[in-house]
Image (cartoon, rainbow, N blue to C red; front, side, top):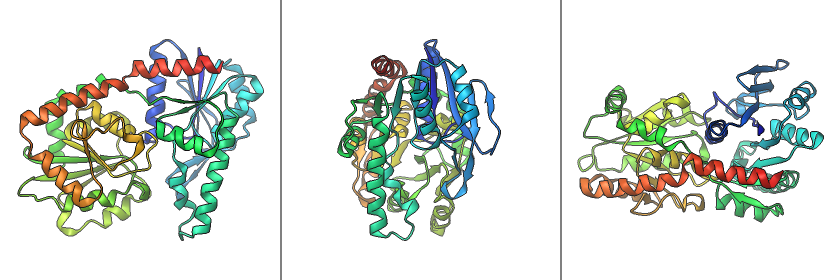
Length: 387
């Protein structure tokens, strides 16, 4: 098949949507399909085509963490897409390029599949800095109506979790919604865990000792991720009982303010790596001992699955999107607040090696449920039904 993947965000951006699209592209190419990525870049007029990636004109919005906005009307790009003779269009975003993908599908008679990646209700704070209740209410109603309309204009809708499917059904989406969690090349992540020299070097570069538990957060640095709960929980760990450091990897609108808010006493133990290349992501998981994210705004929680693939226990707040991933005392632990997070980290950190190995075996077994082959087969089922 010739498949066009339309997205407003792509490499070098680092976020869950990009990682999901990279996995999708990898799975399709591995199975001999021809894949074209239609995305954008911050250039007002220029269309750039390189290695089957077509970047359309866009404007960088610094106020929205560098998000590139593109017009849904792209006359020159429409001719390029027409000449690709696509069999299916897979839209992965709601805005400019997402609208353009739908337009191409309808004009050219190509089936359109839409993956709904983002829980936009949790992002209304970006248009409501003064936290006015009326603005927030209107924002959520708008999200509901727009989501319903966009899903109605597609031939099939994919949700990465049951939580997302239930949310779309609440919006009144009548199209059949297929739950397809993003898959990973599990082995490529796990291989990094056995590169002990590389792991030692990375830990050493951050001043992490061999006997210290390295707690990892990897993802977007933004208000909706509730990272302050993680930092507060880390602060409450008894370092005599559990020598540890916290490594925060990623960038976002809250990066500088979060970094500036760190107490002087934590400067040497709360570490910031900033944005890293996607190719380096598995190294950071492999160099860590546990993965923690307090976010309850995930549609799937791809970072949790990546951490699983590297054998890391997961620490999370309860969220329907994580129900099948984080299993208490098997693949990880749930916490309600910073006090409970500190207690559960100390509990895990003081486990015997035998107890930790039992958890590790369950983590690796669970990660296999998200392998790339299973993901590919599920995606192809949706494509065939949409045709």
